[in-house]
Every structure is written in structure tokens, then in C-alpha cells.
Length: 137
Image (cartoon, rainbow, N blue to C red):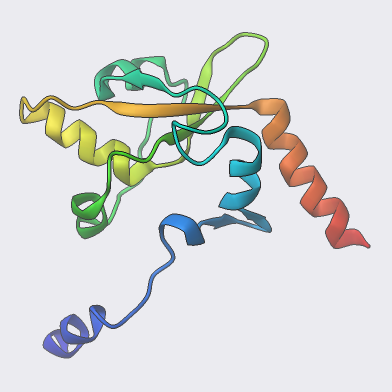
């Protein structure tokens, strides 16, 4: 059975990258606010993974699929939710696999950095409020 599942895994399509959603909010909704690359939208901020982790109020603690971490592409920016008033970094909304890969690279003494786009907490709340309001109609 294990061999059968391993053979079929390559044919299964898992939600990743541009298919990411949270409830009724799609990654494209977030991109409309911050931009999808460092060349468009908000400016990207560069961090060493350990530096970013030290700024996060809520540290990444999710167990991630090692294959997705291995295949993560570090050229895409992470989306981090930031409190607009305090400027405190809350958590990584999108890019946990990219962050984990960069952190592994840093631990292996490779030159690892991540690009971050900031999404403010009020914008985050408006995204989910908007989607909830549209669902009530």
C-alpha cells in the first residue's frame, strides 16, 4: 500500500503557491494590496531567517511537509502580518515553506535571506470582513 501511495503522490495536485486560500480569501486578494513580487506593489524588506524569527510575535511552529520545504522557491516574498500602530511583526501569513527552507539553509551556513512584504493587521481584518460580508448576502 505504501508503494502505491508513493507512486500516486506525483500525480496528486496539492494546493500550493498561487492556489493558496484562507477561508474565502485567495492569495490574489492579498496580492492586490501588497503586490505579488518585489518589483510591484509594496517594497520588499530583506531579512536573514533568524533576524525575521526574532521579530515575529508568533513564531512559526507548524510541522511542514519536507518535500514542499525542499521545493520552495526563495525568490518569492513572504507575506507577514504587521501591526500598523506598533510595527510589531505578528506572523507569516504566506510563505512558511519558503521561510523553513531559508532557515535550513542558514543553519547549514549558506547565505540565506528572505524577502518580506508587509500586510497590516487592519488590511488583513478588512480582507476577512469583506469576504464574510459577501457571504452574508
